[in-house]
Image (cartoon, rainbow, N blue to C red; front, top):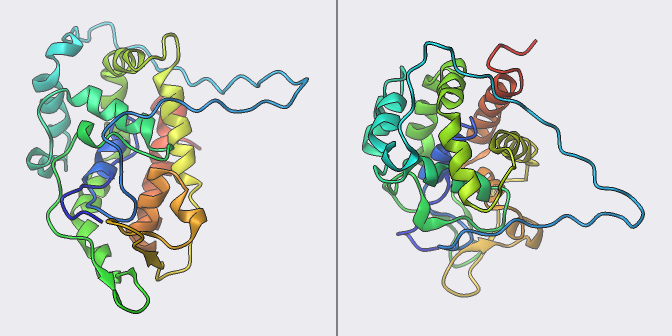
Length: 266
C-alpha cells in the first residue's frame, strides 16, 4: 500500500459532503485509479421492466436567497460557506481550493464503485502511514490505525446534520450541474447521493483483525470478497469497528434529513 496515497473521506455523508470525510482518510488496502469510473449497468431479468429508482426532490431555496455564483467561479464562496458551519473550522487546512464542488461530486459518485478518482480528491492527504501488524507472519490491519481517523471523525460529529444538509440544498444547483457534466444528463444528483448513502450504511461488519496480503506493491484484503467490494466499503472496514459504527450512525442521520427535505425524520 503506497504511503503517499490518500484514501477516501470526510464524507459526512450529506452526499456532497459525504465524500469529503472519506477522501481524507489515509491509505489502506487496494490501489485506486486516477480516472473516474463509468457507471455500471445493472442486468434486468428477461421479460421484466427495470424499476424506476426512488425520487428525492430537493426543496427550492427561499425567495429571498441570493443568487449562487457560476460553477466555474464558485470555489471561494462555497468554501467560505462550508467553513462557516459551526465545527467545520478544521476543514480549512484539509480542503483543496480548486474545483471543490466538482471534486466532491466525482468522489461521491465513485464511492460505490471499485475505484475512486484519486486525482480528483477534495481534500489534501492526511498525515501518517497505514500500519500493518505481523508483516512477516500473518499480516493484518493494525488496531492502531483507528486513532489516525479520530480528527476527521471529530469534525464530522461536530457538524450538525441539519446545518450540513441545509448548506447542501442551498448549493444544490451547482452540485447538479457538476453531476450532469459527468455524463448523467437529466439524472438527479440527490437521488445518487441517497443511493450512495444507502450503500455505505449497508456495509456489513467483518471480523477483526482483518487479514491482508501483498501480491505485488500494495496491500490488499486477503478475503477476495472484501477486496472486490466498493472503494467506500473497503474504507469503512479499514477505519475500525468503533469508527465505522459512529460514521454509519451519522450517515443515517444525514440521510434522514435529505430524504425529508431537511426536516427531522420521525
